[in-house]
Every structure is written in structure tokens, then in C-alpha cells.
Image 1: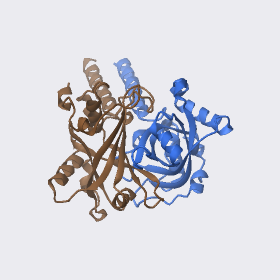
Image 2: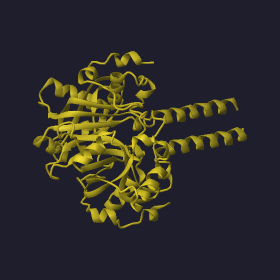
Image 3: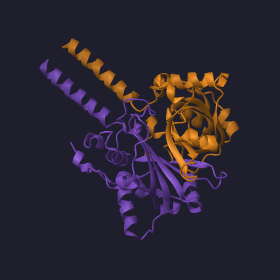
Image 4: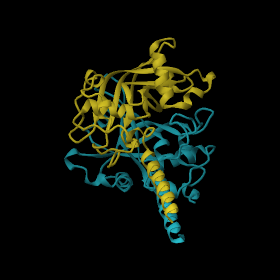
Length: 208
Length: 208
């Protein structure tokens, strides 16, 4: 009976581990803890680093100037070494890149909900959301920043390296000009771009 | 030992059920199957019905006309009885509602990824995404449509009924004018608003 009980315990532990991994970004939530909501810059950087996708919004030249959101994958750096700056791998076969050629104004919206750490409705203020607004810029393919974007994106999104060459995917970044963050009750958190790019705490300091 | 084994089996079943529910919208994915990608209208309606949140995009009057995305909860009807029309419960304390007062042009972007049915990267064409573009309209609070929106939203988002009265939440809908759907390789699926609102198959026909 002890044997069976021991086996059962281990199988249950594995199941709990699976639940823990499910919905997280490559399971990193098990290793990097969520900052305190009062730490606006740390929380925002944690959200950007732990998220693998969001909605990238541009002004649609094909829909009369309507705001056009598009689900995209992104990366702000190597796992747990985020820079806070979102990089993208886009093709002009998709409207978002075409829109950016006409008008660079853009925003990226990210929700904490799919990370799996929310205990309430996706619109509850305790389930964080961030919108980074700025300009969507095409990187020089030969630049060091494009090489950084390639490593940052292909590490978090391994299948990207195999996406079809004839689609002419290129590396882009969002040059952030404004930050809208809600991660608790009481309305948006005051957070400047400088505070976001230079958070009080190094994310690695919160490693368990 | 049989007793322990039986207990263990039931606990494991519960864990498996939790894994199954995790990432789905109130577990309905266990009951409604995903349409074939060739069924563009059915797939789009399934995505709208199974999703509980998305990014609602407006033109920001406070950020010089920039496209501003905002994570919001929505509902297109009672569970598994979706109408395809997204309804929202918004407060003018949030920029999105204020933006809509100035310019109704809007879009709602939804990803299949958080539903938990994707087997690839969030940006892989087989992981569906849809953007509904149109006008964000405030409903007459005394109208039958507002009462429908209340039932649709409060059923899928039970905590909404307890949100603070002094925030003056109001019911809105997206009047859809254009649909951008990618749910397989080969680019966006041709899908008119009429085809979306009147899909070939009733979603209930796909109940297992």
C-alpha cells in the first residue's frame, strides 16, 4: 500500500507540475516571480518579458484609417533577460507591416491573462494589462540590433527560423513613446518610458 | 489497496479534467468542437463564441490620433449561443470609451492561442486570429439589446455584476464592417460580414 501511495503521490506531483507549466511562457513563470503591483516598472518589464505574443495596432491604410489590431508574436530579449523593447518578425504580406510603411504610429497591447497568473476576469484591474504606444520601425537587416532581434525572437519562437523565405519576413521594433499600465485597483499606474527602460529592480533579482 | 487505488484514480481524473479546463473558456471547449478551417464563417463564429477577451482598438484622442489597443472582456451571447456581435461593458474612466466618443472607428482582435487549441506559435497561420473592424457604439441602457448584452456579458463574466456602480459602466457593441481572419496557410480567408453573421452551420450542430 505504501508503494502504491508513493507512486500515486509522484503522479499527482507530475500532474500539478503540468498544470503549473500550462499557460506559462516556456514554463519560466516557475522560475521568475511576479513583482509587487506597487513596482510599476518591474511589473511592466516582467509582463513584457514573460509574454510571447500580443496585439500590434496600426492605422489601416486599406480600411480608411481605422485602428487595425493584429495578433503577433514578439520578444523583448532572451528569456529572463528582457530589454523591455518589443521586437517583431513581420512580412509585408500582412497588413500591419504595410500600414507601418504609410504611418509608423502603433501600439502593442499585452494581457497577463494568458500567462496564467491571474485569479480574476481578464478585465479585472488585478489582471494586468499594458499598452506600449510609439512608432513601428523596420530595422536595418545588417545592423547589430537586427541580429539581437533575431536571437531574441528565434529563441522564444523557434519555428520562426523555418518560416518561408519568399515571404520576406523582416525585423521591426516598437520605439516606445507612451506606456499605459493597469496592474491593480486605482487606475493606470504613472510610468514614464525612462522608468520602464531602467526599472528599479533587475528582473533577475526576483529569481526564486 | 483497491480502495486507495480507486481514490487515486479519481484524484488523477480530477487533475486531468483541470488540465483540460485550463486555458479554455469556462471549459466549453470540452463540449463544442473546433470547425474545419475551410469553414471560414463557422470557424470565425466559434472563435468569437469561445473567446472571453480580446484587444479593442480605438483612435486615441489623448495620444495624437495613435492607434490605441486595450485589453477588454467581451461576450457575443450566451455560452454556445453566440451572435457573432461582440458586446462590451466599458467605463469612461478608461481611455477606450472616451476615444469612441470622439471617433467610433474601432477593431477587436482575438487570438485562438489562449483558448488552448493551438499546436503551434501564436503567429503560425494554423493558430487562428481574427480582427473585426467597425464602429464602437454605446447602447441605449433601456433597450432590449442592452438587456441582451447584460445577460451575455454577466453570464460569461460573473464578476461584472459586482463592478463599482460609481464607475458608470455602460454597454457597447462593435458594429462590424470588415473581417480579417487567418486560420490556415494561404493568407486571410475571404469572409463577408453577411457570411459571418449567417454562418453555413449552426454552432450547435457541432456539439459532440
